[in-house]
Image 1: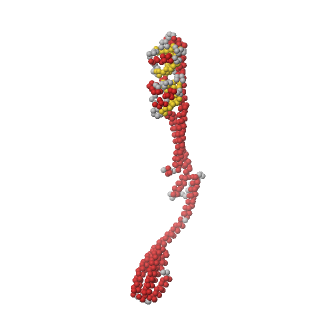
Image 2: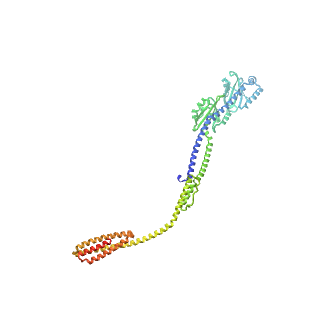
Image 3: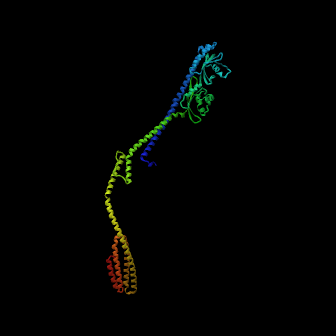
Length: 518
């Protein structure tokens, strides 16, 4: 099928195919390089930078919370308020003072007196703590830890949101007279973490040193799963958990249940000892390439169309002389060609040489046809003459055929006459013993006559075949037949002559016949 296409179509298809193939390879290489660049950029720069930024943000938040907690715990006025009798006026002052810290982005401020175990918040007195209440154990744990600053995470009693409490021991850590501090809503932290994305479905979450999940965009991880060791992903437990708990920062990969490759980047928060983790499926890194693929596809289609149009124009210009040559040859082959028409030579390339050669060919062809036309009349006259000659030859051939047929009939009659002569001579031999020798001579003569008769038959056949030369031979044959007839009559007249006379007459007769061409 491809062989039957025009050259222009073949060249256009071939060029478009080669160009498309090369462009496809170029696009594939470009996408592969872009993919590697994006992955390298995400893994080496964006993901670590993002997790580091989150860690810095929350480190500042926790550092600020610790600083605010220390400010409250180290405030002399708060010391006096806890150690002396608390009046409504002083309590209102402390409450107003605590509310100022809420404006700094904290969810709660609190002060606990070690003497009375009364808990005050920014809203005033809240409750009295008790060792018998499990929920109040955080206070007693903080006091017994003898640490100036400790962080405790548990749901808030007012909002039921998971909250990180920064507990600051007031006074001597061995004999504190109270605990002051602030609380950071981890639910708010989870909302803020949801804003940090390196891909469409990436997640960022906070874990403690033992793997406890303290903030996650999906509340189920905080409330139900609670620890990274309980995440229901076999490859996560196998390839991630130990490395995540052992190292302060790094990049890990694993395949989930669906076989999707996931990347995990983490770093620690120095002030709290927690870790920020960002997890994202690697396949989403390629989504940014869709625009590149679409753009390259559009560019490829545009270039192919452009190449097709340019090639079509160029091939039309290049093949114009060839097409004109083909058209002219088609006119000539159909018998209606104009041999005065010439192709315009507009270039010196192969197409121009073809046009020039074709023009020379048509020139010679035109001259040849002109000469043929000039000799047409002469050929016509010669043809008429030849036709007349042929007619004459046919008529002569027919006449010769008739003469040959007559000669053949005469030869047959002569053969019958010779047969009768033979019979007569035999009878004469039986009746006239005196002429025995003459009879033998006569037999020889008869044999010679028979031979000459056969010769006459051959001459007759050749006369039929040869046509024009047969007339003379037929005439000779006629004379021979007449001589034989005369000789036959002479034999009848002289059969009673003496043998020596007959022999002499025969010799004379043979001499005469020899002179006639027998």
